[in-house]
Length: 490
Image (cartoon, rainbow, N blue to C red; front, side):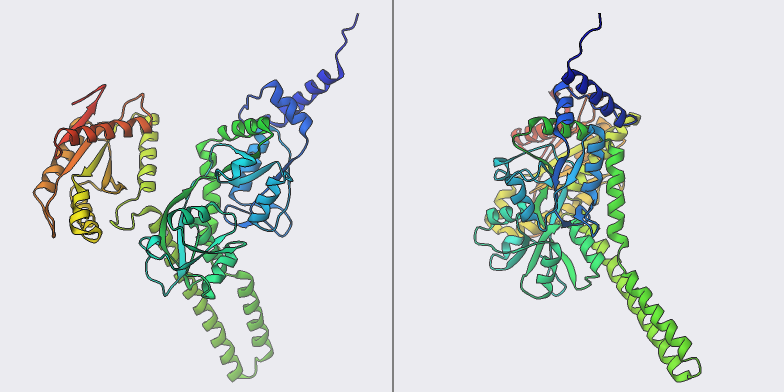
């Protein structure tokens, strides 16, 4: 007697086999039976995006989703067997409004905020980007945006950076704009003192539109880590996308980053306009062949055009170099910033995991630095930090990464260095500091915590040991080196 198979079970089985065939060749995504049934019954997933925020994403002239986020979402949907359909919007604020109305199931790239959690849940972040301040070329360098409370800053409507600015400057004057290009035009029209956005998106726009009159003038202590936002009543969809996201390798992430990072630096010329200029010059040369004077004028026009193009290219290269420097440099001391030190730690950790290469770190803090600020003022305190940084830089190797960890804390990442080497370097630095007479304030000391990577470590455990060792040095009287080894601090 034939066994009876219920129609629902049969359709689920067929759908599961199709889903498996679609993802064949991709890394395995372990979906539960409930998640598989959800995909089969859900149909297309409606997706909202930021319509004009390159190189992260935009909706192009063919109504297609392009950019870094688009590459990620295509990868996520392929791994999970999801069908995505674009729900077009004309601005970021319109995207947020559509998500709140549940006109779309997901937002491709959105920062997790308390306000948005009313109607969306969030995966883990899949990219990170620092925020900077763009101004016109005639503005001075902005060391701290809080020093300009009466200035007007343009920000895209709905961006999380708006709330950050309101938190640190409650009376800040914000000029809401629909997208980055409107924000940069407000700068050029002198309707805003600065425009706040991601360093990559500003760099991309400057290159694409040849904004030679705009520069990066400062960096915010604010980095956004956007996730995929999923409507709150779809927990299975959130789980599926998170699993697909977790399956993406570091190599694939780097390939996506490199693809769009290179575009930011290469799209400097308007080649269409350039070709049109050359075409006009060619017609003039053919039609005025027998008139030498007019031929000479045409040649001069061509030379001037090429000269201006080369001049623009040089200016863009200089601005791109400035963007790279700002993205990895502490603005006060000139050392590596926290982001650059984090990247160095990740690189050394990967070498240790793959090749067993040892490395060590030092975390140090200037002793009683609050007294310097309280007694002499923050301007003198900043001078001490600058002089202290230069002193450290004289004693580290070229292969070491020296950076400002935060406030008066510094970190040194030392490749190929064991316990003996790292304690020796820390002791040498301690002696150099206590024997140095700092301008205005005289003698200063520092407390050092050092440790070496272990096979069982992750980066957080390594930093935690160095931090514990440094605070042990402070608790034992300061101006000393403590090495954290095994479970005991020695």
